[in-house]
Image (cartoon, rainbow, N blue to C red):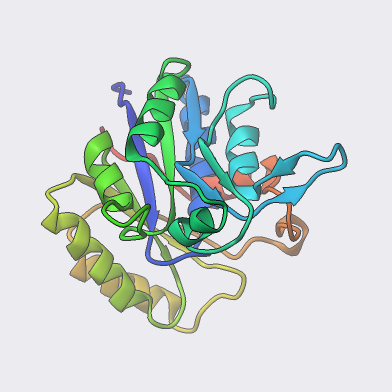
Length: 239
């Protein structure tokens, strides 16, 4: 496989499976012999573990997939307490989310791996501050984008809008992934076919609803078993 420097994983909305997909992609890349790592520009919402550490479930999923211990590498420069839009959660903590800080943190992670999977926060146009958003970050990092579509009512419109927003910024799109979420939607295959006909980019697979034994607990990361299950249903983009 040709070496790529990474992918930017965005979603059609929040809670559509970006973290599950990002972790699964890291596992597939590592299985292909690459040193793959995860990176999260900003994470909103923390919980405390048994050791009293303030953690975020998305970042911890990326850490598990990357096979990293806590003190080895910082995978997220901004860990915010409140589970809210990042720029608003940052304001509550009197923080300014800086594109420059995020980029420097990403570049540091890149020094330790061959491929970095960058997981966005919410959808593609989520603001970081009054002037900049995740779309600006995606342009700066210049990584091919993978769109995660949460397969639920309204997903066709959300997917088409996301595709158009990325396309208008002239950013390469590596493909899209369908995620079935916790409850499989009616006419799932028909919806997938509609999206295939409307979005001229590679379809990289559909993750079925996770078995009950692999469902993620509240305030906890995905297990390696859940990520492995998801990885079985995906294919890596063609570099």
